[in-house]
Amino acid sequence: MSKKPKIRIQTDGGGIPKRNGEGIAYGYLIYVDNEEVMRGSNYRLGKDLTSNDAEYLGVLSVVMALYASGIYKGTKIVEVETDSKLVVGQVTGVYKVKKKKFRPMLAVLDVITTMIAIDSGTQLKFKHIPRKRNKADTVIRKGMDSAT
Image (cartoon, rainbow, N blue to C red; front, side, top):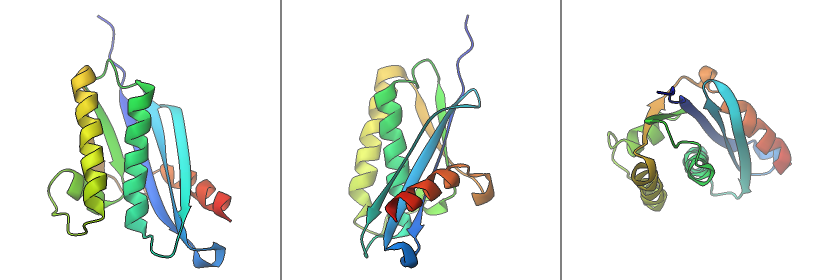
């Protein structure tokens, strides 16, 4: 029997400093057996965007990338790590979703995680980690630089 790969994801989001224009940046890293296999980042400009918007978009973008790549197949659990207690709490149902704008993102996230589970039996486990352990922060810094 072959060993199942361990897949771990780190995602992050943050606000772009006002001196560089207003907006958000978000990004992710995907590791298979502790080796980085994929990364991505993006940014959105706009005055009404918050760091929480960035955190949600980071999680959503990495889960979509995970599904599109199919690299989750053959593993039982994928760990999704973020330094946002709010996102982890809301995704896992521990916190109530008070802002209506996050409800559609959670609905899409739920659909994609369900598709992954139906496709392969793989479950996504969302986990809070300290900011200093989140290496995806370096990816969003590049996204912020791209925005300026």
